[in-house]
Length: 91
Image (cartoon, rainbow, N blue to C red; front, side, top):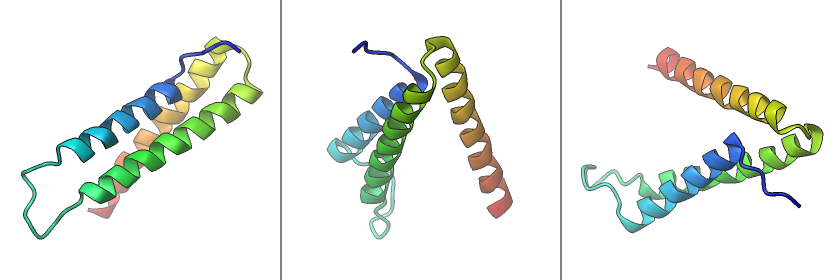
């Protein structure tokens, strides 16, 4: 089995690193009564798992690496755009 580097693999790895960094050194700038570190660690791990499973599904249906990069990159881009739209509309 060949190891393929894909955008969702990079996203999963980045989220896992962020979760480990949050566990090792939490943000000191937050007020004492609001501690979001546990939530952020859980959120990063959830994104990593969803990204990993999505990558496996995309690999199963799209064998060509170039098309896989395009499809996964578009999925990440659409997700970022939707997150931005939700953030703007809910504030």
